[in-house]
Image 1 (cartoon, one colour):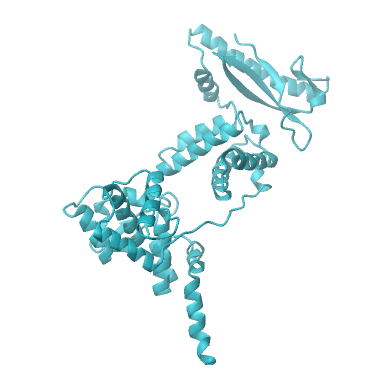
Image 2 (image 1 turned 90 degrees about the vertical axis):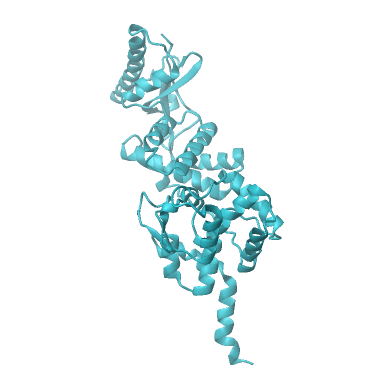
Length: 388
C-alpha cells in the first residue's frame, strides 16, 4: 500500500495566515495530491507527525478530518487489492470522484467540462479545454482551499510571463476559470468567489475592418481569381461573411437547408443555447453569386469546406497582402466590415442589431464608434454652411 504523506502547502499562505493541508502519495511513480479541507498556520503544524499540534477542540476536529481523508484513501487501496484491480492514478481518481470528491480544482473543472460537452458549442469546448490545459501547466495541483483573489492575480501574471498572453487573451482565460469557480461555489466546494474581489477587466478589443474600397479590392481579386485554389476558397467564405455578417462558426455549419426563399434563416452557434433567437438575413446579389459559385446545383448539405481557424486567419493575411490591403485582418474582420459598411450606408442601428443577432443594443453600439469618418461628415453637413 502506498505511503501517504500529510503536509501543509506553505507556498500559498491565505490572508488569515493559514495554509491548506494535503495528502500526497504515488501510484506507479505518478504523484497524487488530495486536499483535506483543513487549513492551519505553519506554527501550529507538526510536519513530522503530519497533524495539527495541540489538544484543543479545533485541533482535534482538524486532525479527525485529516484522519478520515487518509482512511478514505486507504479504503480505496484495500478495495483494489481485494478485487485484484490494477492500481493506476486514473483508476484511483475515478474511484475517488465517484464518491463525490476531487483530487484538486483542476480535476473538478475537467469533470464539469466533460459533463458539459454536447451542451456547449464545440468551439467553446475546445477553447475551454485548451484553457484548462494551460492553467494546469502554470499552477499544478490547485486545491479548492488555495483559490483566493491572490491566486487569480498570480494566474494573471503567469499567463503573461509564461505564454506572453495579451490582456484580451488573459481575460478570455479568466472568464472560463470564473465559470467553473462559480459552479464550485454553488456546490459549496469553495467558500467565496475570488472574482468578487479580483474583478475581470476587459482590454479594448483590436477591431479591424475593411472600408468599402478595400472590400471592393477583394471582390475584384475574387472575380479575377488571382489567388491559388486554397486562398480562393478562404476568400470565398470570407466574402460570404462580409456580406452576411455571419461568424466563422456559423459559416462552417451553414447548410443549403437554411436558405428559405430570399432569406437565410440562422440560429447562431454562439447564442443558440442562451437566447435561441433566429436571425433572418436577406439574400443580396453578392450572397446569391457566392452561393451559385459554391453550391449551384445543391439543395441540401453543408455549403463551405472551411480550413481550421488558425489556417484561415493565416491565409487571410496573405490574401490582404496580395490584394494590396495594409491591414492585419482576421476572419472576424468580415463581421466588423459588414457592420461598419451597413451602418455607414443606412444609419439603421436597430436593423443591424437584428442582422448580427445581438440580444442587446449595447453590443451593437460598438460599431457606432468604429466609423469616425461618418461622424466628421455629419458634423460638416450640419455646421460648415454657417460660415462660408
